[in-house]
Image (cartoon, rainbow, N blue to C red; front, top):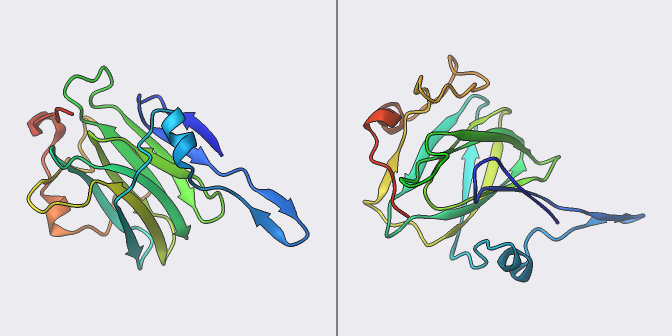
Length: 183
């Protein structure tokens, strides 16, 4: 697998490197030893799925606060999404900066999101599905987030006007009103 660091320290795009033959292909998606050698979390305690019926569905920007801050490894298994992370770590030199990648069933890329980052996505196709490997498990009462359309972030969402959002996500604070995360 190919592990590439993003401009935001600690966040990576991971691309499987399949071996092809007449039967199809085989590729590693995860190896604890390889992850550990890169300083990445190598033990995930929860696996979740996000199913998004319609293109334009926007979820985020979400995170869990310490002591339940999550590391996430995210992959699109069906469809495609515009996937975004925002550094909200208090002591980070890239605080308030974001990075986006397209995750799709075809490109098989994964996004490694370290603790202290807000995460969100907008589905690019109907019936898009994401699988999340997460550590530690979700803990109610520690969820937080940042408003997806914060002008200070200026994230170029594919379809902000047509975004399908939850009421909770509409009410998330602007980055200026957000308490940075100490991780």
